[in-house]
Length: 89
Image (cartoon, rainbow, N blue to C red; front, side, top):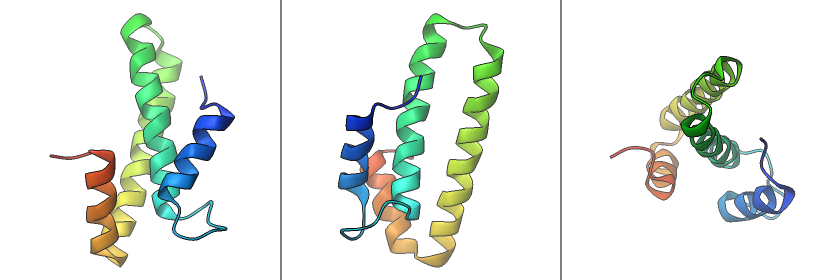
């Protein structure tokens, strides 16, 4: 149920801010968004998987907290990441 190593490396490469960046808010948000999209596809087939649904809700709230932090600290980076990931309208 997790991201493959190749997909994770690709996401980190796309959203990192510097050459050695693997843990910035943008990278974490991108990784969480990838896992959230995988889990939403999983729930279309397994609608009664409540344990995984709890994990999904925790991931969504963690992503929300990271987005709130980014919006508070640097609003321009916040706007860039939500437009790139198409999280909001």
